[in-house]
Image 1 (spheres, one colour):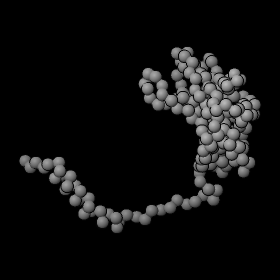
Image 2 (cartoon, helix red, strand yellow):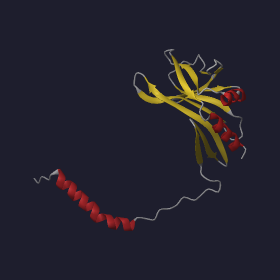
Image 3 (cartoon, one colour):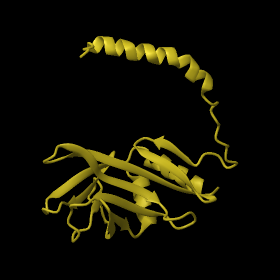
Image 4 (cartoon, one colour):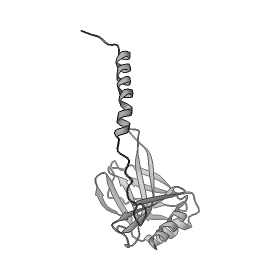
Length: 191
């Protein structure tokens, strides 16, 4: 039986790769460039403070939203996970805007998530549906809430919801950049 040291096997493999490399490089096909869409890229994003403005092409129209995903560490796993995503957008291009929060499952559905501002003003988000690993809650009066978000002078608001064990969970929502992100959303809907 012949024994090869790991070093000699590595050297042999490296030599075979290097000797074969020029032949393979000559046979590689030229890269093909994807055709440009006359309307631009299929998706775009822009960051405004802690908010992201995203537009995605759906058939022949852009569907745009602004959102903020809040991540944190959850017990007992101590793993980073999504605690909440707050979004302003529409279900389809041309539909009215909605303010929706996406929350992870394993929560109490009998208590609506609540967005609270520094002065104590609160907005309840009734649950709409759960799908997969996410539950969605939507605030009914989008115009009222957006006016409040744009006018807020505090740096953060807080989302509160209850876990399945009925423990309250407070999630800070940064308001930094919301005003500019929302203005970009309105502008993108006018195109």
